[in-house]
Length: 314
Image 1 (cartoon, rainbow, N blue to C red):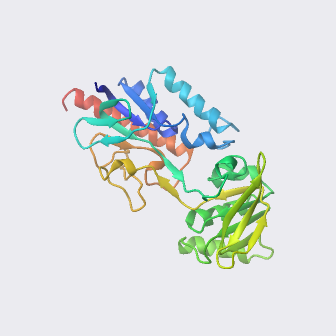
Image 2: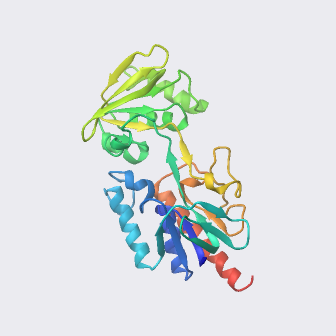
Image 3: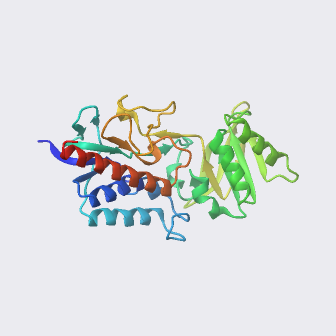
């Protein structure tokens, strides 16, 4: 038997939980579906220092605080994977391994996962020397040595930002050229050419092996041409080799950009009526907890407005 809701939110990160809070307070029946744990990506962050109200807080703790508020409001939450979405009809259908749900509206808040280095034990060191967000965690490495992997805009921006914080920035890229735009390359080149420069380059190298017990202690780099191995000992590693939006399940039902991110308007509405998106899954320039919360607040508000108009026949 299908269970009916006014709004189903897919994803229990900051965007999804913010959408749930606003929608539930608006008086509609809300369900959150999450395949992992409350908090999403912030659960992997050991220290959050840029969320208003907290000078410093553990990412999992912040996610749990948000989740407590969601539960206190009476939002239904189920931990299961969504296996199929049918969004184009007036009634939306969401399929999970054990249950099927229908709703008048849906908020897509599945997020975007950082593309990983693909090295053995990488997950072991996430939050313990490996980070995927320099803006989030860079301040933790003030006057220390850090390494940045990647050659796109995000990587070069991370190098630039970390030069203002760290003692030295080791930049590793598998190619000698960069995928970044000209402006970011120009800024980067100026940093490299400074005397003395904080940037030490390893171009034509990839991560080969990670070392450490409780925290990351060193990284083997391999030259992709000669196979030469060089060991570096950064205090922290920032991986900026791209992100992967979790939009595979949408199956061309909503419009995406060339990188797979969901396109939305100022109300977080997709091209499909009743379907909204919020947080890292959307096309945007800044992916932070604060922006996800803002997106979710807007999506939850306009999704509830949409549901109420359906109920009165407008």
